[in-house]
Length: 435
Ligand code: SF4
Ligand code: SF4
Image 1 (cartoon, rainbow, N blue to C red):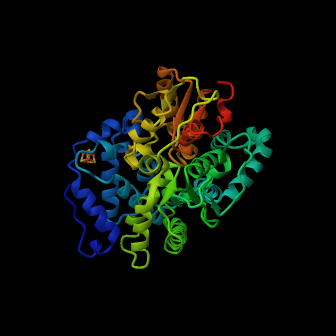
Image 2: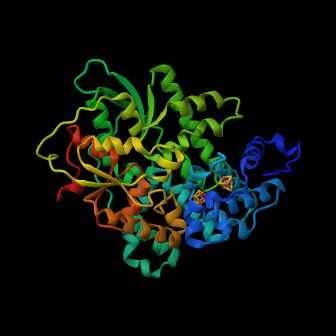
Image 3: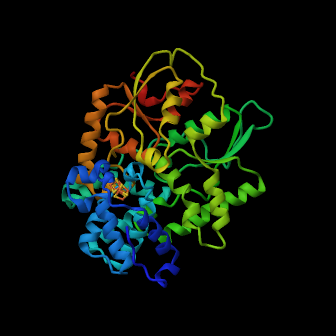
């Protein structure tokens, strides 16, 4: 694609990077075929190719965003299915991030939208605030008929209770039964996940400790920053990125870290992108690159570094039929698909890909909260496809998908790490108690 950025414009590193990305696009439109919003809405402007044109026009001409552009960019799930399909290697992820930041700088959203987005930014990225919000919403739930439709829909997605934590909050979780740990890793426990599904972090820590690995959870790190980044709040997100980079890098230099583990693929995708985000920041460039290099999804880390001790007992001797849901951030964002599936297969169960598994379930960070009707349609399709397998339970590697899918079906859904923990000596997940 021909671009016309001026020399002056290209001094800006974001423009320079977007220029390179745009020049790779040959308008072929292959990406449109696998875009969930294009499939659903049938409008070229709701396709990757259409959005690429919208972003190009906006940033190249340095035009402020308008209502039409914002509508179509907001409808993008950032599922990155288009990146997997594109034969020319167009990095749509970096382009849409640039577009979203430009929108935030040049467009004033209607008051209600601003309030909702600021509310999500403040509450979701801080576990304490999020916990408080759930308590408040549970209290207000009986009065929800008095709220506007959008708020009512958002309330219906909030979990009905906050689960109890079984592991105390510690900085270091030492390896079990070994004098010296075989490895030392940091774990990102996450903002939303640590509140609504603490059992995922607990299973991760238990599993790693049992296999001789020491786990470090720095107290000052909770959110990876992606929630704010994808809301277009780049400056706010960068504060979080910088704090995380400094804390982990310090830990790496002082005490050594073999990896930084993410067990939420949405967060892992962002952590792996820190290096790109700080590519032109003299103070953070090298450190950010190191953090990205150290980051591994838990399934990648287990596959590459751990000899798993599978144990059979009466709790796990039954054979299950499992549907594996490959989160978009995992398969398209991180290009990790077979590894988690193969790990689950090692448990001796039957594991199946979900038909049309490349299409998003509609979760996509805050998407199911902000674009509820599209998210519902995508969820409906996902559930229909899951039912074709008729599984006893579903496994996946992203808390957003777990929350979204469990809103559409009674079939239990687990994190991959909970399955592996269970088959290597951990407890049977409570959600499967009746199976
Ligand atoms: S990221 Fe997903 S929703 Fe957005 S344009 Fe690409 S395929 Fe479509
Ligand atoms: S598939 Fe790639 S090259 Fe073709 S239109 Fe989409 S982004 Fe451009």
